[in-house]
Length: 252
Image (tube, rainbow, N blue to C red; front, side, top):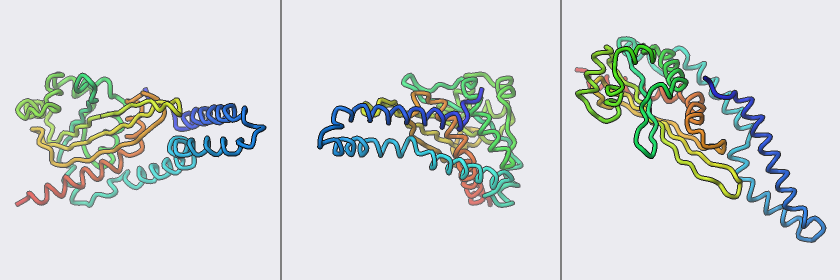
């Protein structure tokens, strides 16, 4: 199931921002009739400005949305990759696997990442890369073989790739850092997605990634999905451009 739309997120952020403004006014009310009123409001505004600029700048978010849409359109037909690279990619089939790094290790159950998988697969198809559905992956390889892609077990990874007939593996690892901002009274979540492109045995041939901060809560996977929607197109172009350069340099 997809997450909330950007429009609904903006409405929620506006409501949160209004609450912060009301709180600031309430804090300043006891000083309203004193000479210190202006100074108090200035201090509150100065303390709030960095956070509001980072978390509640609607104009900037809308501009990012427009920029992301432009990138998706320009890259929808393999933009950013030359003809030789697209031809090379057309000869391969890529399996996508995703994991989240948690306190207990890597969570590799692919059913947890259906929406993330769809974003990456769509980006790959836009570049002319053939992929597998999650149903095809589940039908042909076991969970232990999926795990092999993340534990650097080349023999098991190669066996899994041969079962699928996959030439390349796109491995995504989600990491996060969560802290509570006591002044703002909001949780801060920093999310990073490391993307690695490997051959069938798990040997990494290209890598890239994306990262972002949010004040939206502790929903790491929701933030990761938003991050992929915003940045996956450009990150995938870089990843496969690097792969093509690597492949060309290795060619006899």
